[in-house]
Length: 149
Image (cartoon, rainbow, N blue to C red; front, side, top):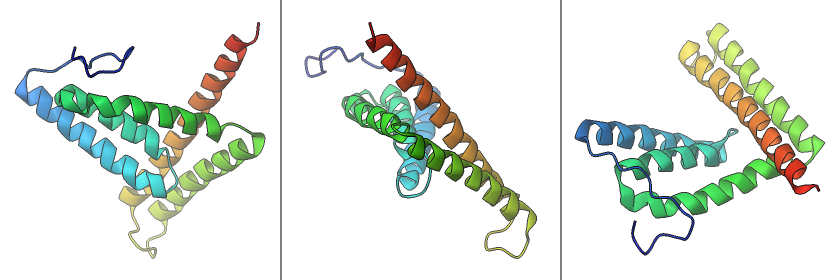
């Protein structure tokens, strides 16, 4: 571990096999790109950027220094998404809306980019949004439970 790493931050497990490094770099890059797109579209963008950075840092250890700041911001965003019943309700409606839009896009041929490739990506986005919402709610609830004496 280098002296420049923050205290308490673990060094990513470096992958030495070139094929594995390329696979991690490609997978991490895809997650980062999709996450960046989802920063402006409905979806868990920052969490996907974090997942991509974690994969990329295993392939390119120099990127490990960016993981902790993104992790902190992603966790703040996850906590904020379940801060009130209204936010939870809005997120659930957005997830269900994405799933419904995906079904419509898969079934109605007259829509732009119609077909199941677009529909499946919308359905998958909705499912991921709902799953991350449940994860965030459980994380915040368990943290609040641990904080009470």
